[in-house]
Image (cartoon, rainbow, N blue to C red):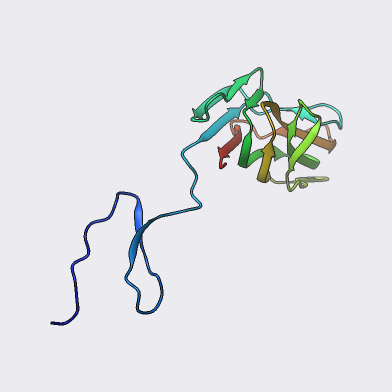
Length: 173
C-alpha cells in the first residue's frame, strides 16, 4: 500500500501534535488555557470627589467560578494564586483619570490602568474607558478593590451613566 493508516479518535479536548519529520503524530493536551475559573463583577456609575484613589462599589457578581472568591461591600476576596484581569471604567467629561486593582490587605498596587483625558473647555467631550489589564500573584487570601482617581474635576464631571464598571479576573495558576 500507500503507507497511510487510520488514526484512532483522540481524547476530547486534545489536539493532534506533530513530533517532527518522520515521527508519527500523537494526541496531546492543549496548554495555556484558562481553566474556567472566572470572577466577573460590575458596579454602577460612580462620581468620586477629590483627587484620591476611590473604591468603585462593585455590587453585582455576574460569574464566580473561583473557589473561595467573594464580593462584600465592593471588596473582592481572592484566595492565593496567579490571576489575569481585564477591567474597565467609563468616563465622561473628566480630566486626568485612571483606575487600578489594589490589594488592600497589603496596601499594594497589583495593576494600574492606562488612564486618560476626556474633557477640554469649552465644549469638547468624549467617553473613553480606562482599561486595566495584566497578571498578578497573591501569596494568600487577600482583599482586592477596583479603584479610580480623577485628578482634575470640573463642574460637569460624571462617570458614564448606564455603563457599569467591570472587573473580570481569571485564576490561571
